[in-house]
Length: 214
Ligand SMILES: [Zn+2]
Image 1 (tube, rainbow, N blue to C red):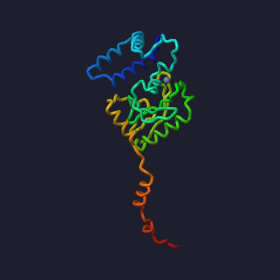
Image 2 (image 1 turned 120 degrees about the horizontal axis):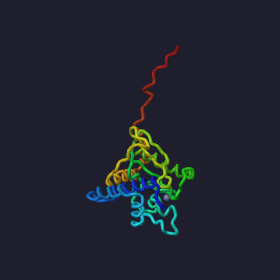
Image 3 (image 1 turned 180 degrees about the vertical axis):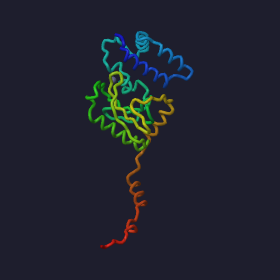
Image 4 (image 1 turned 135 degrees about the vertical axis):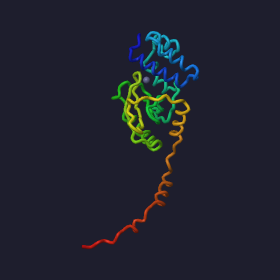
């Protein structure tokens, strides 16, 4: 089996992302060059040698070599911000904007049509939370497919970002900081909010002007 040019491009992007995240600074440059220079056959050999792919395995399934299924299984480092029985939510490691997140269905769903409504509802819940914490201008929720696995993207928009905007390579510390900000966010207890409102309440009785009668 040979990787298609599209698969080669995606796999290289994934590997470069992992180098960015996990390699010591002094090794990054040479590792990047090595990956970039590989032809499809060399890339495939590299993946097999490193147990990242195993085409010879008889019981292989799409799941067994899907990077997103590996994230779900906890085999790949991810910055998890939430989880329910159907999906996990993580920060995109190459975000377009601060708080760019992915809702990854736990099942290997290959077609956006098959993403259950409940997963979109989960994404909306996270989107509402991000809106409170990060206060973007708006938030876009859209699906993408990474190597066969459908994802829901949650993209906070602060200026003019779009899903096609340039991605940033954030250092792990920065991703951890954003993750912390989201995970540790607590809604103000309702009581407190009520009290605040009471304090700020305006006495409108002072504002009434005498009625002018015709
Ligand atoms: Zn998958």
